[in-house]
Every structure is written in structure tokens, then in C-alpha cells.
Length: 117
Length: 111
Image (cartoon, rainbow over all chains, first blue to last red; front, side, top):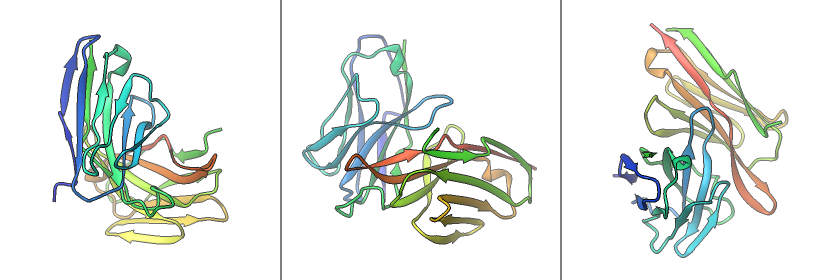
């Protein structure tokens, strides 16, 4: 039972490079999301999806793109990395009851530590 | 004023002590979550509750909807309980459901 799998665990990029953070879940959860966590700050929502083909922006979406072609996968793309995107990134998923995605426990991946130089 | 406030921000205690972490919120909620994050580690969901009390092992979570307050208790605390404990509430705002996060409480249990 893998749960939420995030790859890679660590990544170092140069400014301007692009990359994709992968997130996959095997629990058939409709809701998936990406957060970033910075020192001294709480989790901030980047993008989220309530089902395949549906994505929406969170609190801090600039510089990031997402897509949701399948229920299982929700990749996060950095098109042109900037030092301000140095952070720890978490993917999370949960079951949605059709009303709220937040009435079910959240399942998190182990995080990706990204450094942009 | 933040919509979800946790107290204390930091807590250091001796092994065996009874621990209480508080979460107060100012919005209407559909559910409240307690999560745990170990240093350098992932985030684990501990409890999700919308009323009453839940217990899992040495952890107990309570919520008072009228007072808009929740507490997370740890009985017989152990150094392995050292972690950041995060409160988050699911709330309907601007016709969308959102998850509003507290800043976390850093707990250190000394042997």
C-alpha cells in the first residue's frame, strides 16, 4: 500500500531551469494538492485538483503549472526556476465526498526538498 | 488576526508529562485536522474531527464547536513525540471550501 509517492526527494536546480515534481497516489482519491513549506511559515497551497481534468490555483500559484490527466497522478511543473522557489514541496490527497475535500483525512507524500541556485 | 491560531508556539517538557496543544479558530468549519511532522520528515494525519473527542493510543483530540476551540493531548509523553503539531480547519469561504492552516506547535520532549 504505497499511499502518496513523491519523487524526487531532493533536487538542485540552477535559475532558469525547468523540472517536474511527480506525485502519484493509489487510493483513488479525487482530491490532490501541492503545498510548499518554508522555514517559519505554515503550509501554503500552490495548486489543487478535485478530479481528473480539473485544476485550480491556490494561494501561491505563480511560477508553477499543474495538470491532472488521470486520477492517480498530479505533477507540478516549474517552468523557469527562481531562487524564491527554494522550498520543501508536499503533495497531498484525500477522498472527496462531493461537498468538501476537507472532510476526510489528508494523506501526504514524504516531500521534495528543492534548492534553486 | 489569523483565522486559525495555535498555542503555544513552542513547548518543551520532560518525558512522562501530560501535554496539551491548543487550536482556536474564528470561522465556521466542516472539520478540524490535527497533523504531525517530525524534523525533516513527512506530514502524518493524526485526527480529523467535527465534534466530540477522538482517541488513538496516547493521543486524544477534543473539539468544542460552540467555543471554536480544539485541543490535542498527549499522555505519558515520550521523546519520540517530539515533532511539530499542526492544526488545520476545513471551512467554506467565498462559496469554496478551503483548508486553513495553523502555524504549528513545536514540541520537544526531553528524556
